Image (cartoon, rainbow over all chains, first blue to last red; front, side):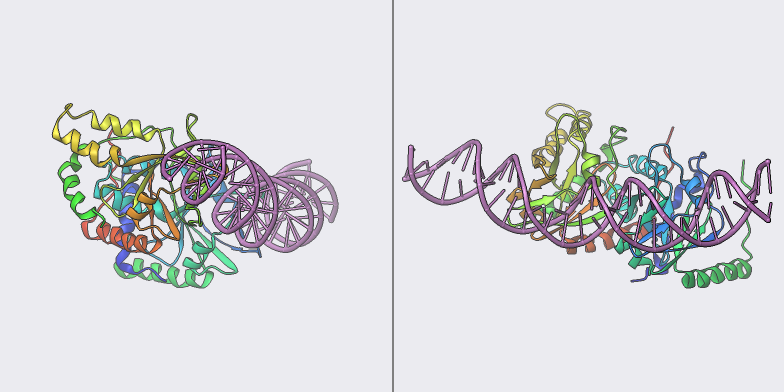
Length: 175
Length: 175
DNA sequence: CATGCTTTCCCATGATATCCCATATAGGAG
DNA sequence: CTCCTATATGGGATATCATGGGAAAGCATG
């Protein structure tokens, strides 16, 4: 089942804190790489991404079913602690905490690398993004996405079109 | 009959009070897993949850009949101290403290793991959440919830809708 | 004490995940 | 041009986890 555009706001909530900055020590996810899923459901995380994910506590990655697209979102494990801390500002049993946690933390998995820097894709997650043989890893700065190569081609064209048509630009950071 | 709706009102009255973090050393409850209840009423606690529950004093979990939903809430034993501390912000014998304590602490059981990391679901608790064959374990950070898979599907959609409709976001942690 | 009932422990199994080794390929360094 | 290292990929061997069932250990009842 493919998530609809109307879910975009959920994602905004999830990513809302990026506008206030995120842990600075993390590396940036850059560029796009296509890797292969083997018979056991394993994929190599692109080398550069592994460095960006580097966490001194846990060698792995957080995957989330994207609330916006038919893809998976990848984060550094440290991100989850930050999200949890933000959630803890709400009262226990409050509907805000419950709703936000359900829309974010519940949709994630924490996956460790094997000795070769690969992860095993949980079937449920692979199915969600339609991942079969090849996966396009797309670096987007503070996170990355995992797409089927063909779906990524579409999405990429769509994003470029949006930037052109709407004249989107990157404003200077306010001091 | 499940007293969910009526209890919701009690809680709404006091939502504002439960504030701020929980013991930071605990692991986070992440992701959603479905496990099976066997003929003896046993369920495996998902492996990652067991690590998050890890307590050097007691190998087990605290289950609570949710004061707000038709589900069970699961906590690390250490979290009970946190809840007690929150309750102690109210005056002794105040109706707020009495009501909240009755709706939370009084509705808990402490359950130990068996040698395989399973717990036996008390019949009363299983019935409260309508748990029969399969249980969805939902990680929500400082706690997790146990739902029937179908009830969770509904709740999940509801939470996403709430986030969307109310425009909920995760505010930056205040210093 | 015997009898049932429940709880706990222990082992077996299949599925999955993880480790370890082997190979291939691409850059870099010398 | 060749060696060396990091990465990507494949596959066999193990270890771990979820699950089911039997056996032993409480525990109340008559």
